[in-house]
Image 1 (tube, rainbow, N blue to C red):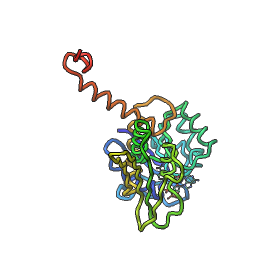
Image 2: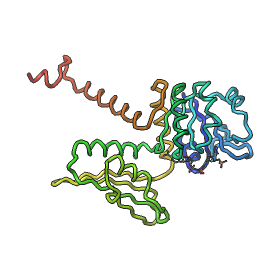
Image 3: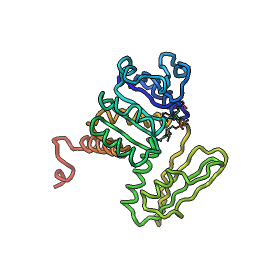
Image 4: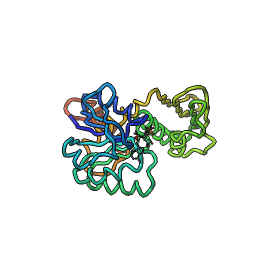
Length: 265
Ligand SMILES: NC(=O)c1ccc[n+]([C@@H]2O[C@H](COP(=O)([O-])OP(=O)(O)OC[C@H]3O[C@@H](n4cnc5c(N)ncnc54)[C@H](OP(=O)(O)O)[C@@H]3O)[C@@H](O)[C@H]2O)c1
């Protein structure tokens, strides 16, 4: 079982802690938040301590509470506090921080020379799959009309970052993105491919923040099979898809090991 430590216990961190604490593949050993706080535990899990970064000696803490992996849902600055420790101890890192500067990203890539690092500004498995599927279909059918529709709660002011990323990766003009602001929708993204005789819609709906935890758990599992290096979510997803396709094509082989092409000759 992989021992995991979590940085960040805000809105996302609390949801991620709930998912990791319930996942039998992982042992969530501890959680850090930033500000000085009374010693507490993860809600519903009295054996998982929540501590303050400001009042803990990390070196000593890791000697007493060793982990194989750290998951970061705190702040872009936090890696300065723990980076050296995970480097010397070769602890895997899954960081979901979406606001790293270019210099901080360069530092993370350097860290990837010493240990396994996954950095993903969007760690939801479903959204990453949607992005990849949309890119594939765009490549297969470049003649199709493509539009992106995103829907969010009434108060969200800007076009969603995910919709912008979808448009960018599909090479679409800004006006191909339609934003609707209605009621309390958590997050809806839809890519519509219009063909002359058919329509394909790829849709993702966010339901709860726990989806970030599902993505982090997937990243931990995939990263644990990787060698030292710096990875994106796309790297992990592509390698899972490739492995699955290879397994499927191997099981499709006719008995005797002949391929469909060679057996029809
Ligand atoms: N990749 C994704 O898909 C994804 C999804 C959701 C969130 N995120 C990222 O996760 C992070 C947290 O989001 P959130 O919505 O949970 O924010 P939040 O509710 O504000 O929580 C932030 C957490 O980080 C801690 N923190 C604040 N400043 C810090 C610092 N300088 N050093 C270390 N820790 C610090 C806070 O400590 P206290 O508890 O003591 O205040 C808190 O636990 C953000 O960077 C966000 O971009 C990424």
